[in-house]
Amino acid sequence: KMMDREAFAGSVATMHRCVKTMAGAGIPLAHVLRMASENPARRIGSPNKGRIETGADADIVLMDEKLNIKAVMSGGRMIRDETDPGLSEG
Image (cartoon, rainbow, N blue to C red; front, side, top):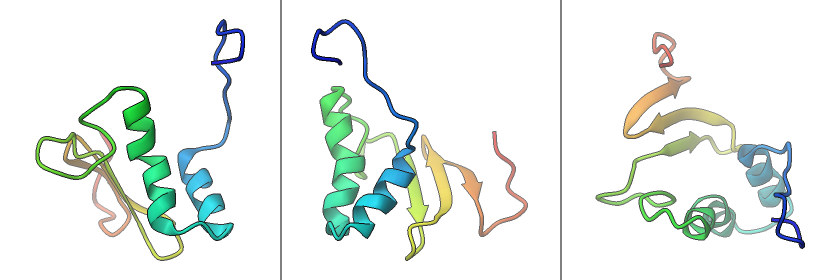
Protein backbone atom coordinates (compact mmCIF):
# COMPACT_ATOMS: atom_id res chain seq x y z
CA LYS A 1 0.00 0.00 0.00
CA MET A 2 0.95 3.59 -0.42
CA MET A 3 2.08 5.61 2.59
CA ASP A 4 -1.44 6.97 3.22
CA ARG A 5 -2.80 3.37 3.20
CA GLU A 6 -5.52 4.40 0.74
CA ALA A 7 -4.19 2.85 -2.48
CA PHE A 8 -1.91 0.08 -3.63
CA ALA A 9 1.30 0.77 -5.50
CA GLY A 10 1.83 -1.37 -8.56
CA SER A 11 4.21 -2.33 -11.29
CA VAL A 12 4.03 -3.64 -14.82
CA ALA A 13 7.11 -5.81 -14.25
CA THR A 14 6.38 -9.53 -14.19
CA MET A 15 7.83 -11.66 -11.42
CA HIS A 16 9.82 -13.52 -14.08
CA ARG A 17 11.43 -10.27 -15.26
CA CYS A 18 12.20 -9.32 -11.65
CA VAL A 19 13.87 -12.69 -11.05
CA LYS A 20 16.06 -12.29 -14.13
CA THR A 21 16.96 -8.70 -13.22
CA MET A 22 17.90 -9.51 -9.63
CA ALA A 23 19.94 -12.58 -10.63
CA GLY A 24 21.65 -10.49 -13.33
CA ALA A 25 22.58 -7.96 -10.66
CA GLY A 26 24.60 -10.63 -8.89
CA ILE A 27 22.22 -11.58 -6.09
CA PRO A 28 22.54 -15.31 -5.34
CA LEU A 29 19.83 -17.29 -7.11
CA ALA A 30 18.64 -18.95 -3.90
CA HIS A 31 17.96 -15.50 -2.42
CA VAL A 32 16.27 -14.28 -5.60
CA LEU A 33 13.94 -17.28 -5.74
CA ARG A 34 13.03 -16.88 -2.08
CA MET A 35 12.25 -13.19 -2.72
CA ALA A 36 9.96 -14.24 -5.59
CA SER A 37 8.14 -17.07 -3.85
CA GLU A 38 8.36 -17.65 -0.11
CA ASN A 39 8.55 -14.01 0.98
CA PRO A 40 5.47 -12.76 -0.96
CA ALA A 41 3.45 -15.83 0.10
CA ARG A 42 4.31 -15.18 3.73
CA ARG A 43 3.50 -11.48 3.33
CA ILE A 44 -0.03 -12.18 2.03
CA GLY A 45 -0.56 -14.87 4.65
CA SER A 46 -0.81 -17.81 2.25
CA PRO A 47 0.70 -20.87 3.95
CA ASN A 48 0.17 -23.13 0.90
CA LYS A 49 2.08 -20.93 -1.54
CA GLY A 50 5.76 -20.13 -2.01
CA ARG A 51 7.22 -23.53 -1.12
CA ILE A 52 7.57 -27.03 -2.51
CA GLU A 53 6.56 -29.59 0.08
CA THR A 54 3.73 -31.91 1.02
CA GLY A 55 0.51 -29.97 1.50
CA ALA A 56 1.59 -26.96 -0.56
CA ASP A 57 -0.36 -25.94 -3.69
CA ALA A 58 2.26 -27.17 -6.19
CA ASP A 59 2.35 -23.93 -8.19
CA ILE A 60 5.75 -24.28 -9.84
CA VAL A 61 7.67 -22.48 -12.58
CA LEU A 62 10.55 -24.43 -14.13
CA MET A 63 13.33 -22.38 -15.73
CA ASP A 64 16.45 -23.21 -17.67
CA GLU A 65 19.95 -22.06 -16.77
CA LYS A 66 19.30 -18.68 -18.42
CA LEU A 67 16.10 -18.29 -16.35
CA ASN A 68 13.81 -18.71 -19.34
CA ILE A 69 10.46 -20.26 -18.42
CA LYS A 70 10.24 -23.84 -19.65
CA ALA A 71 7.21 -25.21 -17.80
CA VAL A 72 4.49 -24.05 -15.45
CA MET A 73 2.42 -26.09 -13.01
CA SER A 74 -0.64 -24.78 -11.21
CA GLY A 75 -2.17 -26.86 -8.46
CA GLY A 76 0.08 -29.73 -9.48
CA ARG A 77 -1.27 -29.69 -13.06
CA MET A 78 1.06 -28.89 -15.96
CA ILE A 79 -0.39 -25.91 -17.85
CA ARG A 80 2.64 -24.97 -19.97
CA ASP A 81 5.47 -27.22 -21.06
CA GLU A 82 7.80 -26.07 -23.81
CA THR A 83 9.39 -29.52 -23.83
CA ASP A 84 5.99 -31.00 -24.86
CA PRO A 85 4.58 -29.11 -27.88
CA GLY A 86 1.36 -31.15 -27.69
CA LEU A 87 0.38 -29.82 -24.30
CA SER A 88 -2.53 -27.41 -24.47
CA GLU A 89 -3.11 -24.78 -21.84
CA GLY A 90 -6.25 -24.86 -19.76
